[in-house]
Length: 114
Length: 112
Image 1: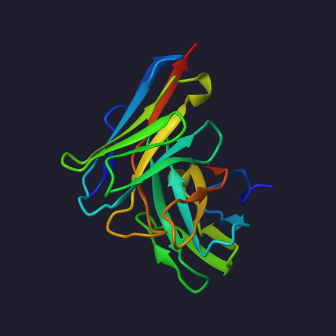
Image 2 (image 1 turned 45 degrees about the horizontal axis):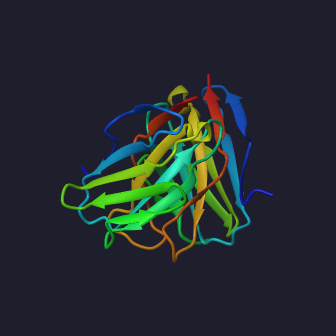
């Protein structure tokens, strides 16, 4: 069935390095993708999103890249800080648009070493 | 104050008991969702509601029921709790015009 998944369950980086978290999706009809950050003991928080008519979108220290040809999504975090340590989830909206159901990937645990 | 609140935050119960988890939001969103999170897994959708009169099953609705008492309130019930329903439960809301969902802090439920 359709699914959203992540390549690596864990990622460990040094403080100050750039981090790249990857996500593969299988529903070619998805036109909206979103990244969430979940810190321990908290609910997921929005980081950045991107629509399928874009290849790249930048936020503050974060960039999301979308490659529709290979159905791949990545989150890049520049100058990673200890406060970035969390689980990161990608999600897609499937065939629906606008305030719709989201399908989440399994998550990647990012650990930032001082 | 938090925009999406959940009560209780932690609950330990026994097999066979009826449990209700509550969610309230002050964001004025029409759409509300209940998710379950297990260790090493992503969020899985249990039920969702696009307005007060609308209730829809998600991918793992068996053993759960919901009630949308008002635009701001969406409760999740476990009629007869079983140990494999031990998990983190999250409520979320969204505006119909946007895809982003806003999550509550979660309820940690343990069924013994």
